[in-house]
Image 1 (cartoon, one colour):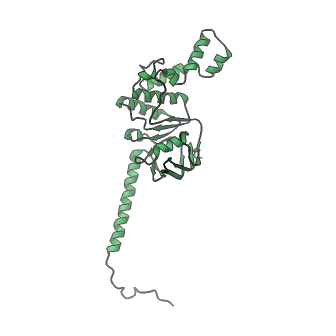
Image 2 (cartoon, one colour; image 1 turned 90 degrees about the vertical axis):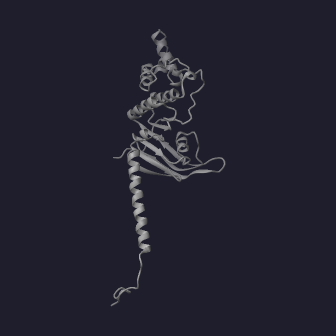
Image 3 (cartoon, helix red, strand yellow; image 1 turned 90 degrees about the horizontal axis):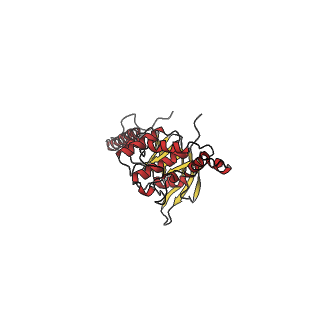
Length: 267
């Protein structure tokens, strides 16, 4: 049995306030695994992710996501500069409750706040370390982080949440070489569904399938970016052969029909 779809877009219609149409009755199904979404600039890739994430509302149609959704936009908003790393990761209140319990405050409120996340601090530290942020303490202010560290911090927050579907929009844009390879490792270890918009060839070669967005429609290709380029080359070669054959047929001289080449006889 095929796996159920992770993301389903049905009949989406969306236009910007100035009337510029982006999608008209657009439908798409994203299967589990790692999916790359490519297309020329302005084809609507980032807009589509924002529609799936609920940041934009379509004029018509619907989006269905299987499970919890995570979203790492291209233009990140980390929050106020004085926000601490543990707050950005969403674990500050849990860690405070664990420490209060360990100090003897066994209140029902503290236990409710911790729930099953007794190892939240350890998981956060391990996730940060894996992404190359081992020198970033949990109490650091995010205003002290570089742009690349901010991207990795937001990715760490998503990994800690463990959503079933994660949307990434140009995640390597502000990363140096070392940070990009940390992100590649994290993407390679992801066990949920990822939908990634990117121009990063190395990242797109880690993909299970490619969706090419063009003229408000998506066309699917199995495999990574290299496999996609090979498939497109085969398609273009076949199209060129068909054009050459058609041109040759048009240019072939046609003399008068010979004997026996007229209309079919009757009787």
